Length: 246
Image (cartoon, rainbow, N blue to C red; front, side, top):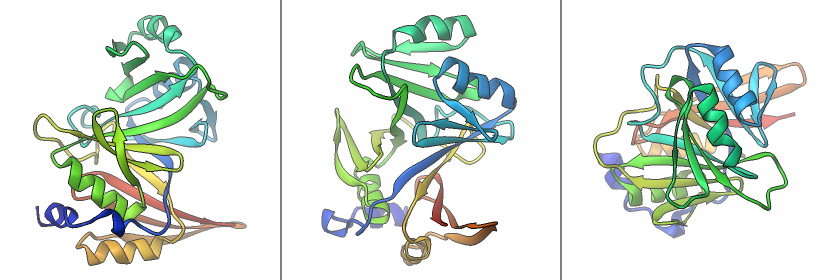
């Protein structure tokens, strides 16, 4: 709990100088074909090189049967904007997926394959078929998590509805109060979150100063190179950082 307590000391003045961008969501799946159909047939994403493109955000599939769904973990679900949620009630029923219509009337949560929970919100002004909206954390410490992600990744503190939140240029991080104990994301259906940053090493140094171990590695693939970092936040979210260089 020392790291969580330390997070409470962060203030808005301590926000990172540059903001990260959400790059991808990691998903573990027992059946890759079933998972792909969920994202590309039920949802309007596109397959690209065996992965999934949902607008600017990717879903990275790993052929690993998850130990459980996303419910009950620090990342309860992820959310997207679509033009209308109305088609998804029939589509989810036809595909055999459970769903919940949120009381606001313009949102639906679908329990997809392997227990991946996806929330869709209607946006009648949307120009894209699907666009990432938020990562919905279920946390014992909303304020502490808000301050921590402001400090480390530059997520601007604010509110989303009744919840504490942090805004990045292409995503909202929602910090909802957990109703009970939550599990880490490692090994679960939503396995982790990937952010694109300007300088992996600088953030790695910051994390290590906070007592969070961050592993770094370089990757070279033809004319493309990237620096990766990986760590687990104080609440159990597996996080990957990517610094791409062409």
